[in-house]
Image 1 (tube, rainbow, N blue to C red):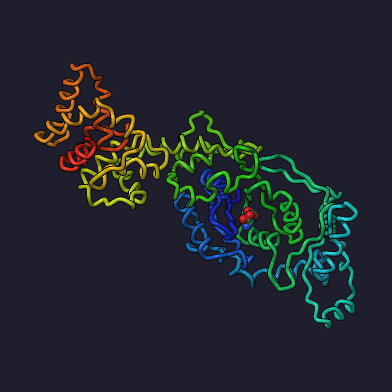
Image 2 (cartoon, rainbow, N blue to C red; image 1 turned 180 degrees about the horizontal axis):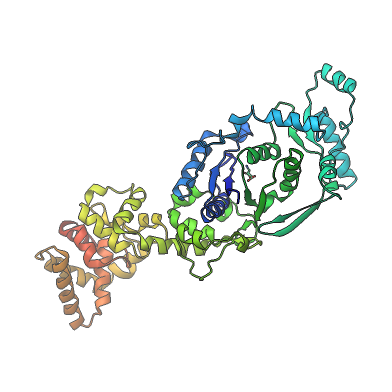
Length: 487
Ligand code: GLU
């Protein structure tokens, strides 16, 4: 059996989109499953929309997701270069081949002439297809146009190719995901393969690259189906083997519209900045179209690769449920080893002076605050009271808790006793228990007693384990804050 070779071919006109990450993952899984090769190709023929920052973002995001490629611009490989802009000298030869075989022709139409054709189609309420006006120009006519200074674009001759390789105008292929797909090629216009400025168009460059890179399977979004028909005809016209194609359904937002910025993050790097773990992201996108045979959704990429079958990918669209991603992310945060979590939280704590805490105190702070984290970035608002001398008290906490007579009594007593406590977590645990006990005897619920202390020390009524908080904050700061809360 021929070697399985798949590719992801992003255009660097933006940061790596989460949908492209899914396409990359499914290609990667297919390669893994079949002992094949996963190739990264950068499709940067559109120089105006391309930027190095986007290329870097694509590399970094794929790597962060663990989708490492076997061949690509940075690692090289037997069929390089893997960046289209470095391949411009490769394409003319194949354009010439198509011209020689009669599957392509020079088109001298100006943008204005083409615009006029399009306007007429609109007026007649018809879908626009190129008129083929330049298909049969004589050599003299062409020479005259060139003498006028017109530079031709090259168009692919759909009908010629279709007739040469198929009995009817219907072109069909068996999609790995969607089953048989077909189109009436009479409805396709002769499209440009080489622009008059000499640059190849996407539909042409992609075929030459897939052919020369020996790509066996093309797995990509269903928005490319209409391109696939055109590409099949170019493969055939060049006498090349046609790869197998599989088209994935779209990823839609919960409101069933196209996933876009207004729904939330869309680029992998944006999700990461917001505090999503790449392990959670990749697990989540795998489930957009694929489901595990054992119903167990939390899985590593390696586990998914074992279970992955391309024929079982759903052919319909998937909904991007941010809530589910959040649930998954909180699960992955819970599973992170402490040391790893400590490291990963640091970028979200830059507004605090971490040198206020010893390493052991930092570890303890993370231990007691990690439980409710959905995003790594949630840590920012979970820990302000560990830093600085004093604390900001929420207005309702002031009126509803600190200003009450009960709280005032609790705090006065706390200040008196705590001055003499040995300030270790173990000892504080005992002391606080006794302290709550004393107030309980006076008819005050332990919960209410602790509210007062918590409100004075943290400015909040909810939060992490109070004994640990006091131990981390230290005796001095604790007493200062309690004093400040007493009227
Ligand atoms: N550069 C194309 C894109 O980003 C690749 C499509 C393909 O996989 O052929 O949409």
